[in-house]
Amino acid sequence: MERESVELLAAAQAQLAARRLEAAEELYSRVIARGAGRGAGRHLATALNDRGHIKYLRVEFAAAMKDYTAAIQCQPGFEVPYYNRGLVLYRLGCFDEAMKDFRKVLELNPQFEDAALSLKQAILDKEEKEKRGY
Image 1 (cartoon, rainbow, N blue to C red):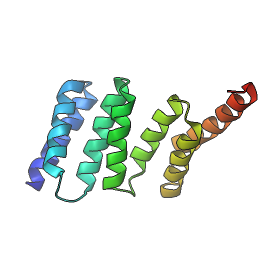
Image 2: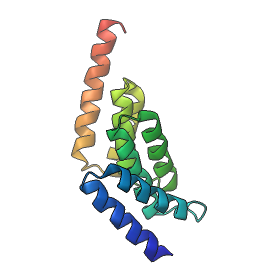
Image 3: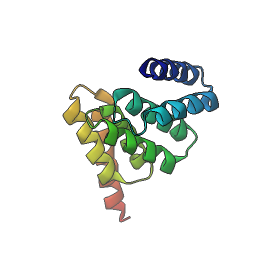
Image 4: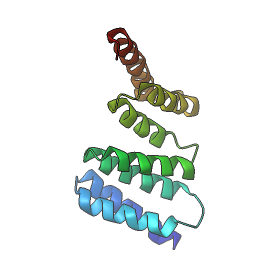
């Protein structure tokens, strides 16, 4: 069963790399269905995060955030879904929440340069928003 999930995850990642989003999403959903109820694991968290990325690419932000949050709940030490959720929050103008996620990424992985840059940008944009009064 575990081997099948690993193979499905690899196939989904190949589909995502080839930009075949519908096929990738279906394969990630199969991995998630297999992993649900069996306790959290890195494969399940990766599938949730990557499926969330597909939804992000489709500008389905609420659905993407749901998958990112589920990935975080499944594997709290996995920094990538925090970063991805932070990006969605940033795009939505929720700077405080985005900064919280970017800080968590840096707590988990201080070398995550994109998170450091995103945190700096969120701080600047929040300050600019406050200067403009909205």
